[in-house]
Image (cartoon, rainbow over all chains, first blue to last red; front, side):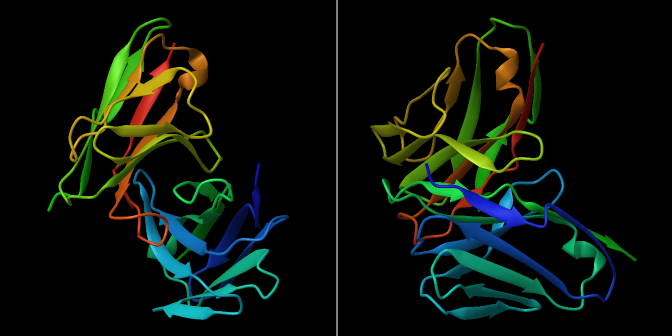
Length: 112
Length: 113
């Protein structure tokens, strides 16, 4: 089945630093979604991307839909302690428009 | 709106026991989903429903059953618990298909010993 590979698996940064993470697939995706999971909570949608090359921002977060449609990137600027959590990319499975495939996540730790 | 609520928050089962994980949403969403999240992994879809009376298998349905008798409720049943079912279970709902945001509940942490 389709797989999404996220990198890095984990990041340890200082407050105020910028963060970049990415998600790649061997298959083409028509939609890319970025979720954040706070410790002990369910994931929350941060950004949705629907078109190749699209660049979308949500506050300090910016995500891009790769031109090849096989990758996506998430950047966080000027990180703060509440950015801690796991960031997942996700996309719809080819065989069923109702199912999402999730990456394994990037664990972000921000040191004050 | 409470959104998506799940009960219980935590549960320990013995091998072979059965239990039902409850999920309720008050947003009148048509679509509901059950995922499991193993440590250090992403979410895997167990079952989903596109409306009352309609359910379908996800990636990892073995060992689970679901029903959707109302729009609001989507319980997940484990009949014979096994250690491999130790995981965190998330219920989610969305108004429509994938172009619509999925809203997740807080999760149920299940341990099977």
